[in-house]
Image (cartoon, rainbow, N blue to C red; front, side, top):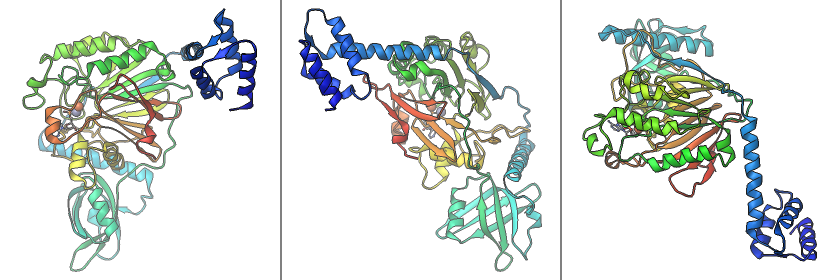
Length: 492
Ligand code: D5M
Ligand code: FE
Ligand code: ZN
């Protein structure tokens, strides 16, 4: 026990007061963090004839102190929100048929090539047609196909004018080929092997440079979430309602500082998304689902800005990029002054912090084709997308992609926060200064997920302090909410 504490206890007893053991323990616990002698003085002032100091007497005052602090925070952040919608794809020039996809891939190639040229010394970057048998040639090409075996791999690269097949035997190059998503752009050094064959000496994705993230000057928080699935029998309405109650009550600092909510797709469950979905729906009427979502969001204080992008359960075009909800489906939500309907993907700047929102359908294709990756660690699959600088590189598997004149799924800029959902598992990573966050779900495990062996992490909400990009999580799945730093789950 500290000298100050013993002194304080002696003085209190000398004044004729008794201290209950529980109160004494609490005093010891908090003696480092509060001005205990001022606190006991206040307790005595309130006691009257009762000469016993109980735990409750002290607790009441601490709570009041906390409340005062929260009130102060609320006053402190009274400036208007500071955000910009940097990319919201509402209109897109489509190109139909096979020429459509040719144009899309040619746009992808050119955009990623320009990005690579900004990053690396491009003076010796050649076209595939320029590969010579005499010396090593550095080329940029899209991965047309690849075949990885034990100890070796072959890869076919193509650019606008040609194709080349090359083999790799170096274990680190074979590993790189294994990790590189199909249809992404790579920079490879190709040399000639025996009998007119080519060898891959090195191969790299465009990647991101080491990045110093932008942060907010104000200590303002943003809740990043996804996959509510309102309308599903498995939507955890009580847990979501507990989150809203927590927001309204503002009894702790995170709630008081929260100014933004980002919902990264699958806000509603929709209809006809998977076979026999109707058996798992609370309501099969999309308008009713949207009304219920609107009613929930309407309870959120209007000084909190809410951004919503669609996922594969929303009634919009499934081919990506997906437009924002529109027409009668959007109407109830647009009546809320603080709701902003965005496309998938969308770019957002909140308090100076750049956020890339993308629902994450392509994560399924990444984990299905990359050995070592799984849905349990979606943030690692997100890292693959970021390194490929493309949100859905793999063409022709589960992710429908719209043939368009411009490939808007290229990640042109380095985001400070890359936000995805879809896999229903909360996960985070830091990669070269970027925060990668997959934000889980508010839906219990569905029978489909039981069959697929997907174990979701429902009702755990990550909240980002925009001034530091540190993440805390709040668990609303239990009545006893537990707060913890996300860094504890996956240390950097
Ligand atoms: O996706 C919820 C989860 O289910 C997520 O982990 C992807 C997985 N999922 C969704 N659709 C499919 C198909 N067709 N095959 C395999 N796995 C799938 P959600 O978008 O919420 O339904
Ligand atoms: Fe979902
Ligand atoms: Zn989804």
